[in-house]
Length: 365
Image (cartoon, rainbow, N blue to C red):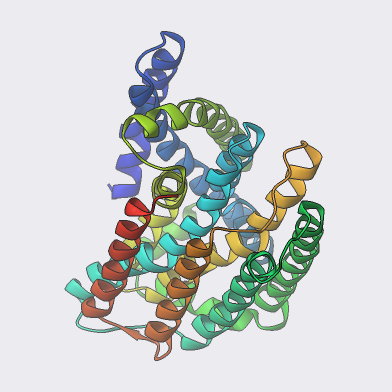
């Protein structure tokens, strides 16, 4: 049984524990930890259900479903936090998710995959396309911040209007990336799947041909997991401020480091798991694709949702957050340019993430 399956079953026990902790009014730290652990298996089941439905719906619709639900957990947690007025934490979680996927997830994948295989290869063209698109996202995040820091005084309404404009552009760009990956250049993104299939033996191939997922069953799992994540997120967000304050953690560190670890658990397990199986194409696609989804879709959606629920959120990030994202994108691009990876490059990515994490921990914000 894979680590992903073990976690998806074993951590389910924390869902009733978190409910008891919430309604029996246990210590806020206990509520925070148990609800965070309760979100992890739900996120894995949400990801699994999406993949199973994708098997039935075919590659094109399946890829679209993965694009829509790929970061559903992070989006749900962010919307619940935004509804609670935790705008600073939501902003920090956006940058934190991008940084953790590019440095922590890719780093672990390259390190653990590199321990098993001396050198692993992946398609550099996919990394380059994702890297150039991420650069646009960094610019969109950077500009509102630079407008404030290069002006004598800017009205909040102007920054919000700029953020809405940038959000619209980013959503449009994300739509174009879907057209590129699903239609005009879909052959580039078939490599990871082909390698995964050719790497299996005949028995597993026969098993795969007989595997016919029950559509209604997995749609039900998808619905239940989504509702469960939303419910657990309410409990998690309700305790996050008191619990992290008790630990002496700032909202900046909480958003950048802690929230992405909870929301992105499914992607972490998937990316590392396939890297250990020597499928770095898929691993890199998961890590970079998740960052891309957050930057081009999740962040803009949160800006627009904030307007609807009367909790305005702009793209004016803490300058150090912008620096961290720029560093993560630059380092990830440099390491992935040649289409090869080894354990040392993974260690370098993890070292960069560790230093950034320490910097956010000691940041006085």
